[in-house]
Image 1 (cartoon, rainbow over the protein chains, first blue to last red):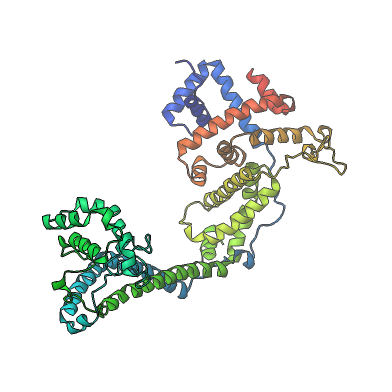
Image 2 (cartoon, rainbow over the protein chains, first blue to last red):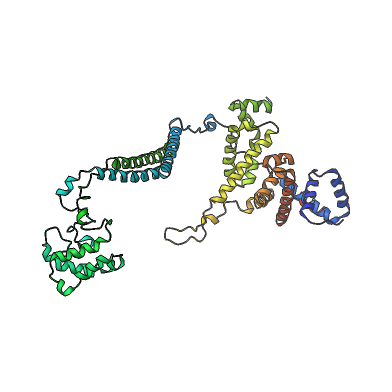
Length: 300
Length: 203
């Protein structure tokens, strides 16, 4: 077999040089060396290289490397002690409690809010039923204030935009003076709403009677009031009604009851939970920072 | 006191016993480090740190060849140093600027502090050439070649010292010798008459 210059053959030749080749392989290689002059030359090259390397003079140590007690004193790290683990545990516990409060707020807090709102409605109804009726009769018609101060029963939502036409403060404009303008408002602005709302036939007749606009200008307040009454007659149960029917006046004419007491109490629970969350978060963050800063100071 | 007794004493915090072990092995350790690092100063530091590490981790010695265990500590330290040198080469590669702001034509980092060839004997020049060839080897090959061919270690000792199988040691040594042979051929004129004669006889 011809000698091939592969890594495996080089390895075998090198190992043979040091007597590290297995006996069988060594015998085979020895036979090949005796037959192959090129392989013999390679072998002698390796022998010479090794001899030259071994001829390198030993370097003398520049000094003794013996150790002193100071050199072998291992720099022992200070243990963190008791305070740091306690801080880290406290921080973790606070963070866990913070998450629990969030979970409580999401799971348990939502029904609580709903319950509060639901409880408030019956309470309000009960108070309204028990309210004394005689006080209502003394104070005139009930005013449902819809966000803004208006002339009772004559302005409604459009009051502020049409100040002087029904939305001004009570008593600013005499009703008789305001009547023509009010009628204009009724015809122009309220017409689409009237058209859309179902209207009883009687009401239509009333409106038709009140509609002749040429005569309506400067018409007395009574006519406008009739039209207004006719317009609102079909929806007696609406809370937007300005002036209730005669027979119903006084029934809901009651002073507004005070806000039920339980409502604010229940709402106070949520801010306290928020404060708890803020406190827990602050503590968790602070304890974590302190526990990380303390060891660095010690080891530096 | 024999080596085993010294080791036992050193494991019981007897620093004097460990120092006696150091005295027995320091020349070998320094030569290995010197050949691997190709820098006597760096080798000195590496050997000192190796002995400190060896003393602090003496409890990990479980018997066997103390020389091989100690050399493993030394070679590991040399590996660390070589890696550090690669990360932060200490040679200043930037050109030197003189006071007038002109770049110096022959900066100091190009200067050769070694004596001129005339100052060397042939033997010294050959040793220098061999060391040069060793320094050109890849690290893994260099360590094996130094330990086996220069320091005359056994294969098994080297395998333990570098933590590699015996086959790896053989393979690396063969390739290292092959490269060294090619490198040394460039310095044929420096070969001793002994090597030249062998060369002539073999031809």
